Structures are given as structure tokens and as C-alpha cells.
Amino acid sequence: MNFAGREGSETNQLQTRRIPRHVWPCMAVMLFAQLLVFYATRLLLPYLPQHSFETALDAAIPVRAEWIIIYYLTFVFWIASAVLILSESRAYARRMVRGYLIAMLISGVIFVGYPTTMTRPVPPDTGLFNILLALLYQMDAPVNLCPSLHVLITYFCIRAAMGSRIVPKWYLPVSWVFLALVCLCILFVKQHVLADIPSAILVGELSVRLAGLGKERK
Image (cartoon, rainbow, N blue to C red; front, top):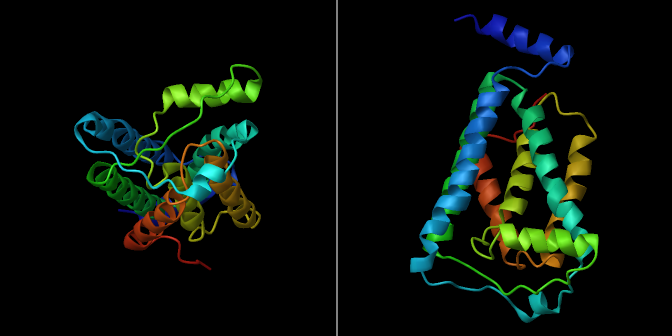
């Protein structure tokens, strides 16, 4: 197989701002794995005991409905990051998909092996932010909380980007700031508790290392 020609073709695509064709099936596999873990594990939860990592500090954190905007913007960040990083090369895309599958597998095992839940407030039915928060609560029950997939996937994208040669210089500092906002966001909208954050980063780091991602490339 002409790997040199393939790499050259991908480089030309990036130079002309075209997204390489291999990006789309990779994203489809990653999305399928995420949805499978997110929904399939919930079928077992009614038969499993639920646990809680809530602390007094978690209870003291106030609800800030306006942070729901960050929560929804995270989906945009994931898509944009995946397209950018997967465009690096076919080889790097395969490693990224492998790492993502590892992350989802570990998360799924934890979701079933030690299911967690939490208490959530009832948001007022007035105001745009409260309506968006209530919509989130309707779509996503307070289960499968640890590790937080919002933190995990955001962290995974950043670490995977560290091994890419085509990610712009501004991406990493901006993304680290965004990760910090995501960590605050999931607490202020009462979607997760504090313990869900370090567990997500731990799973993300483990999956990156197992897949050989995130090493600085020159």
C-alpha cells in the first residue's frame, strides 16, 4: 500500500481545508460507543443498588442555572475537537478511536459495577436558563454519574490534541480553560458531584496512555 501517497493526500486535504474522509467513520464509531455506554447501561440500573458520593460541600454549592450554557457548548467543543484531531492522519485517528473505546469501556464497567446517583433540585419554570436546565433534567436522569462523561470526554480531547501536529497553538490553552469551566458547570447545574471530576480525569488519562496518545510531536 502506498502510505506515503495516502499521507500526502491527507496533508493536501488539510491545506485546502477539506476534512479527510476517514474522519467521518471514526466519529461514527466514537458516537456509537458513547451512546451505547450512556443508554445500554441504564437498562441494568433498576436492578442494581444505587450509591451516592454527595458530601456536605456538594450540598453547599449553589445552583447557577446560567452555567447550563457551558454544558450545552461542550457538545460543540467535542465535535470540533474530534474533527480537528482525527484529521491528523489515519494512523493517529485509529489510535484516538482506540483510546476513546477504552475510555467508554472503563466508564461502562464502572457505571454497572458501582452505580451512582444524586439528589437534584426542581428548577423554577420561569427564565430561559431554568427552562434549559429543566430540559436537561428531563433528558438525563441522575444516574451514571461517576465518572463524569462531560469531564472525561473534554479531557480526552485535550490530551489527544497534545499529540497532534495540526492543532493550532491557541487550542490547548483555550481548551484547558474550557475544561475548568466544564468542571464548575457540572457542579453548578447539579448534574454531578465533586468526586465525579477526578475519577473522569483518571479514566481519561488511563485511556490516553493505553492508546499511546497525547505524546508531544515535533
